[in-house]
Each structure stands twice: as C-alpha cells, then as structure tokens.
Image (cartoon, rainbow, N blue to C red):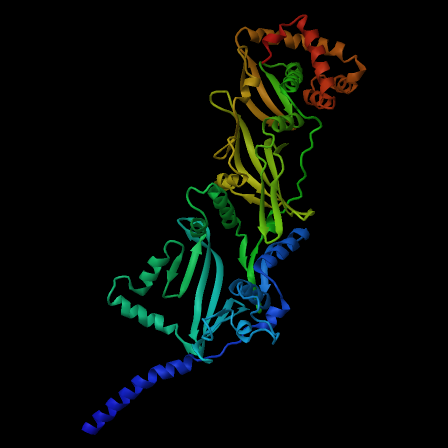
Length: 551
C-alpha cells in the first residue's frame, strides 16, 4: 500500500514538473509573415483601398452600393502599413538588408526576438487572425502564435420598439500556438462566480459598458447605433445631430450590410438606394434688392385683381412656382448650402449641397436639396442624391408666418423616409433657423399680404400656384363688388395692346378662365408684368378704390 502511495506522489510530482513543459511544447509554433502579399500590394494602405473603392462607386452610375471589400492579400498588406509603420524594411526579401529588420516588425531589444507580423484570412462568416512572435536571447528563441477565429454579423434588432443596427463579433476559437484556450473561459467564469455575484461575464460586461456589450455565454461582443454615436461624439459635439441623423438613416433604410466570402471581406453601404437624377430649378429672373422685391410683389397683385372675375367674397393672390423660387433665392440664398471635405491620404472628397428650390406637385410644396459627392481631383464624376421635403402650407395662428409642415421625405429617386424620421433626416441638412422640428417657417412672411383692409384666410397649392385667399374687411367688402363690376371693362380696354396678345386669346376664349390668364401673364417678362399691372391699376382706379383692397 505504501509503495502505491509513493508511486502516486511521484506521478503527481512528475505531472507538476512536466505540465508546464507540455504546455510550452503545445504552445510552441513557428510563424512566417505573408511576404508574398506584401510584395503583391507594395505600399497599399486602408486609405488607398477606401479611396479606390469610393472612386469606383462614384464613377459607376449603376452601382448599387459602396463596397469597402478587400481580399485577404490586400488586408495583410494594409495591416502591415499600420503595425510596421516604423520599420519600412519589414517583410523585404532583399538579403542585403539586416535579417532582424526583415524578420521582425517590432524588435524586442537587441537580439531578443520580436513581433513577426499578422496574417488575416477572410471566410464566409468572418475572418481569422494569426499573430506570431519570438522571445529569447542569444539567438535562442521561443516561438508562438495567437490565433483568433471570428464571426462578424450586421443585423437589425429591436430595442425599445425601435429598429437599430447591431454590429456583432463572435469568438469561435482562440489558440496559443496549437493549444485551444476558449474552453478555459467557461471554467474561469465558474470559478469567478463563486467569489463575485456577477461572475467573469458581469465583470467584462461592466468593463466594456462605456462603448459596447459582451456576453461570455455566446462569446460575443457587439455595439449598436447608440453605442457608436457615443463612441465617436460627445454630447456637446456640434456635429452630433448630423451623426445621429446619418446613423439613424442607415438604421431606417438598412443600408449597411456585411460582405464576407472566401478570401474577401468587408462591408457595403447601399448608397445606390439614394441615387438621384433630379435637376436644379432654373429661374428666369433673380431678385437682387428690396426695390426688385417690391416690384415683384406689386406685379403679382395683378393676380389679385384678375381673381375678381369669378365673383365671390374674397380675392386670390396666386404666386407662380417660378416667382416662389425667386423668393427662395432671395430670402434663403446660400444659408442652407453646405460644403464639407474629407480626406483619404492625398485624395480630397467634397460633399456639397445645391441651393434649395421648390416644385408644386399634387397640391403640396416639394422642397428639394440636391447633395453631391465627388473627388476634388475629378469633379466630372459625381454621386448625386437629393432630399425632397414634401410639405403642406399653412399660416401660423398669429397670421404672421408662412409655415410648411413636412410629413414625408423622398431621398433620391426610390427611397421614402417615414414621418417619424423627418426631424432626424432634417438634421443632415444642418442647423438652420428656418427649420423647427418638422417645419420650415418663413418668419413674418405674411406681412407682404395682410393689411388693415384685408385678412389672409388660408394658403393652398393650386396647380402651379401658391394661392393666398384674401378677404376684404368691413366696408371694403362693398369695394370688392365694385371691382367685380369694373374688371371686365378694364380688361377689354387693356388687352387691345398687342403686347398682351396671349392674355387676349385666353380672355376672348373664356373670360372666366383665371388660371389660363395667369399662365399667359407669367409668360411675360417682369417688366411687361409690371406694365400690365400699372395699366390695370390705373384703369380700375378711375372707378374703384383699388388701394383699399390691396395688401
């Protein structure tokens, strides 16, 4: 019996002595850097890859997405550009160069070994990474590697009843040399949980809570959109609203996808969904000062007088789409224009917006901002999108402001953002005092129409016109009846002028066709419109107190 006890003790001692040796033997593994990848992609960096891929996307008008996808060979060369930045001789095959400089990306002192590099390989669900190092002295080195097999997944998840994007990395395998160690995490968690309430899982989760999430049971690390926003911007960051808007839009439209396959990997952004063929609105005339502005409003008063042809208790001030865009140019100008640049090494890219304009479509006002992205070195190749804000016009409760309430946004030719994301997307345009929540507000605009003798009851879109319904107040209602009696006779006289032949044709065909008269009126030059108004005003003023009806 005693002999068996002695043998067990000897065996235990032998195991104690041999176990570290066995572990070291199993962990021992040589490593060679992927020098063929380095030579095949000399000087390649991740910035180079991103720039090349972005140029390809911009140049291809039919590209569905901007794919930051690269081969394993390209990734290895680009990684070398990072970790061996201080050693340009690393990975060279020229034998005239010092061996240690070629062998080690980062040397450990003098002849103590060093870091030998990283090899990355993509597979269908993610990637593997293997790093090697030597450690020792007097040319006697212990060699080992660290190997990671990772799955990468980008998916939509629901958090607090809202869909957000989750970027998830799952550890499938970890090895030191040839020894798997992932199983040790479960054992370590069990041991730690005997002494702490949270266990190892909770401790790691608390450690990463500031920038992500960790689950020991699934060996997963993930971040969501909110984590990314907090990681790349502070609460007081002036660009935070734009960052939130951009990532919120990525969530809304599920633009970001993973793109992993055999020997290739990366991510794709489906920017093709946002592509636009929209063309800027071209006005035929620009308002340059207050005098021209007043002349424009005065010439548009013709519409007020012409609307009396059809009778009724109110008048219509009809502003043509062209005139409205001239007002936008004058009032808004370049205040909503944006131009920003970003760089990939020596390549400078420009992201800019064109001036805001409007079109009247289906009884709504469509405000459009065109956004362009291009390489500053080749501005002829452009990726273009647009944000079209579909709005309903109204008047503020105090009758002072013209309000456009946005309930939907079209992005590019094919994408529509739901109304609960309108305020978020508006942040992409940048801060502007005209934008309040989901509204565009033209402060004090109604002062151009309302006066002591009239009130503006409503504003609507009628075809190609923004119509303000103006009602005379008090005794001025009787003057409106006088105007209605006198307008036909005044037009019969004025339309004898051959300069107004287009209006005469419409009036002769149908004297009540006010929309046809307005269309013909808007074919005249601003000077001709002003002359027509003056003639109509002076002719009517001989029998009607016209000034009492005008704003």
